[in-house]
Image (spheres, rainbow, N blue to C red):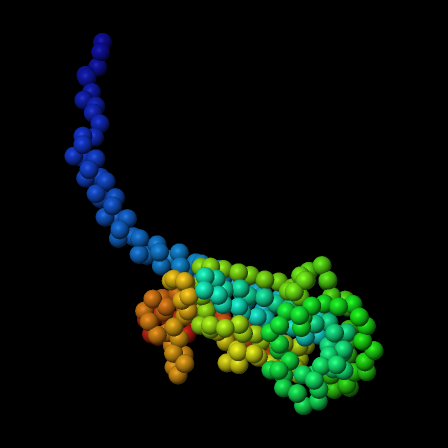
Amino acid sequence: MLGPEKNIRGFNLLELLVVVVLIGILSAAAYPNFQSWQKDRQVRQAVIKVTSLISDINTQVQRGAYTYVQFEVEPEDDSVTFNTRGLGAAQVGRKKIEDPLWGVGASNSGKCVIDESYWIPTDEPADIPTDESEDTPTDETVDEEAETETGIIASYQSDDITVDITTIAAVCFSKNDTYYGANGLESGRFHICPRSESGSICNISITTGLPGDDDVEKNLFRISWSRFGAVTIEKYNTNDESWYTQ
């Protein structure tokens, strides 16, 4: 015996149009939140990678692989690049003899040279007595294979983010704070935010240290460090206009 006939039919055109319109409305409402989440994720990932560069190069200088190291920020119109470089004990010893920047009483900031040729590794020995007040050079050798022809040890580039500086800047560290110096990063910090267009930078007030426009402050991070290389990450909170350590 056959059962009752079922009345099965699909959507008609009007119902399909209603569904499409509802999906469009929901998507439009959710897009700003998704876009903000995506920007925050991009910036946060970049911040983690940048702080890892600083931490890693300081770990190497503390272990004696390098005597003097540099963290460099290179902003460009469409991207920003972060590099780390280092000088071994022999290179530092040679510079104490040959380079006026390493003479007695010379500025530590002057030693933090932004010039790739300054950091290119060399195998030439340096027979140099060390000052008793300074660290004795270690016998541990630098991993030359990790360096490029420009002396770069590690590098990270991103076109999703930008910073609050417009020219190449750097900060340099040693095992203690004997040679700590900065070249364009004397404040001991810089900011990272999403890139909105070509040539854009994070708009930060020089006097207050706070963001200068609404678009920047939503996904704004600040990276700072001590003379010994300890890195701190902070995120700007738009609700109370304050910085919070991450």
